Image 1 (cartoon, rainbow, N blue to C red):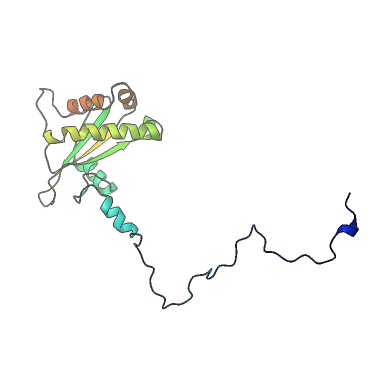
Image 2 (cartoon, rainbow, N blue to C red):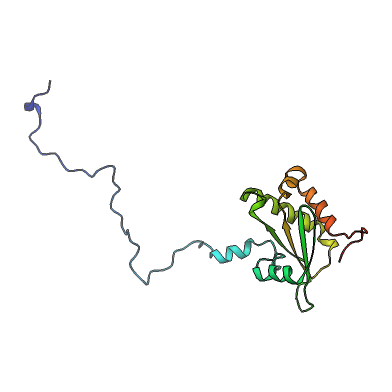
Length: 177
């Protein structure tokens, strides 16, 4: 048993708490507006990174503005089957790029977001396989009908490709332009 008599009467020395970091030399930066810039490689600007990440410098081959979709719906021709509706619109000669452009519309009646994205990927993949056979300088919009999700689950992009091929031909089997 320890008695109070065995304790030292000398006051304990103050020590820094080992759990707290020591004082920083310059916690808020240099404070000097004329300080030299930091040395070493600098982080690239985010916009530069975005442009470098693009696969190619060509314009995208997608329809993205609602006005483009509206023009194709209003002034274009359409053909449909059980799973898809294909709208096509011939762009004018004043258009700089002669490539085909695609827009895809998949409504909520097809399924949830994951299912709709799966359908969109299958449609895009199938369309670009057929793009060489289609006339250039056209805008296309493909609208997925309810039931196409079953086709994608069952046959994948191959089933969508067959459905698109069917839309690209008329009753006599000739390719439409």
